[in-house]
Length: 370
Image (cartoon, rainbow, N blue to C red):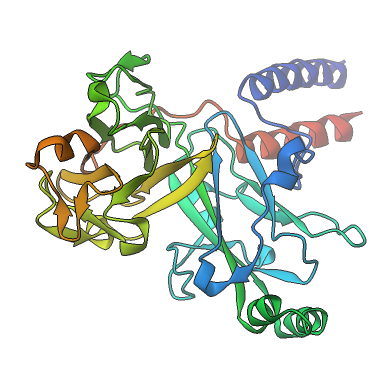
């Protein structure tokens, strides 16, 4: 009778345990950390190695509602990823320096993994990054896709009759994968819901890793100033220069600098904002979108300034701010980077590791009693 009673109590506890784990989004039957099936857009998330001079890169975002994101190193099956998926490491800076590496588990725990999916003949290898969204901290990961010497030799053989292809084949082929991991920890300094800023754009202050994009259109008199804020719980912010013809950004992405004030008389390196700070340009809906990423916040608040310029409205040393109609062709972007604060976080109900361990113990005890 006592054994029957214990079995009944164990079944009750297991039922409660399963309900709690399901509500907390934990898969208790995935003790080996298996990742879910590949997303449909994995083919779009490819980083195609090209000549180093082309500075090829692929920017991805692990949004707050996702646990996983997949990518590949392009169409060449010989492309290699570094750090290797089995190392559990990633580069901390865009330069992909071996002495600047972090470990996934050190940042996000044992269930944070990069997995190489089973290879399919003549298909590029697909990698799947898994970082559970529960109590997730924001950060930026860098991986390098490259083609080894033998692969370049094969490409060289194919390009012997094409001078342009020949030049590309003899250069080192690389592509940098940049993954912005958004935070799922609410920032108490942020408003609880989307609000409209002074420029009429909606900003979501829910503590996500990347703030939504704002538009600074120099051809639109109503959007000639844009002020964005990068809170401590966010790693990146996006903006674009609208669609008024031939628009450029000052300082350019290639300069890796920002203007200290709106006049742009003084410029500073992005590295002054902290390790890993970078400005990245990508294409979205046919126009350039700029992403300022600051993984490690500065010790004190810092304003970062850029200008969107229509061709002919900017000098080499900065924008022309007082030259008649020239001023109408400039839009000023100001990004206030907030210093890192000591934001308290709420404790999680049940994490994946504890659910897995407790579940295995309960099921093992039940099996022993029966």
